[in-house]
Length: 106
Image 1 (cartoon, rainbow, N blue to C red):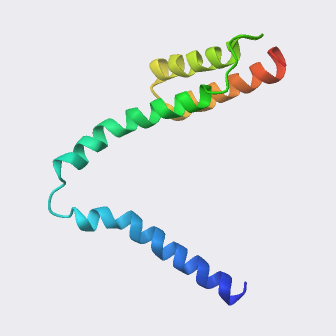
Image 2: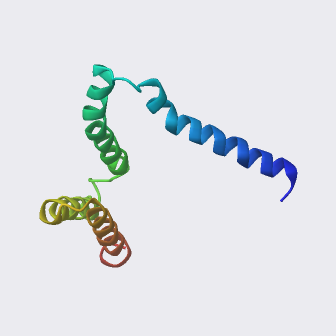
């Protein structure tokens, strides 16, 4: 590894570590109320945006009329309600979606 690449990796690692620890240093004594509020509402908002982004290219006017997306989305919800395991829900939904678009609705 050359020196330039090593310096780049060290600087990027230092900046990443700084950014990860900065909130703990800044809010060491007490977390402001607006930060706590954002911590409560942002995860649901981000999940909503991700769902909308994933479904933005779904064509519901032609076959298969968004069926793979609907089935995969419902399977994610069903797995989450059943097992309450996010990793299982995401992986299960992804596997079901890939099977649907590769084998069932090619």
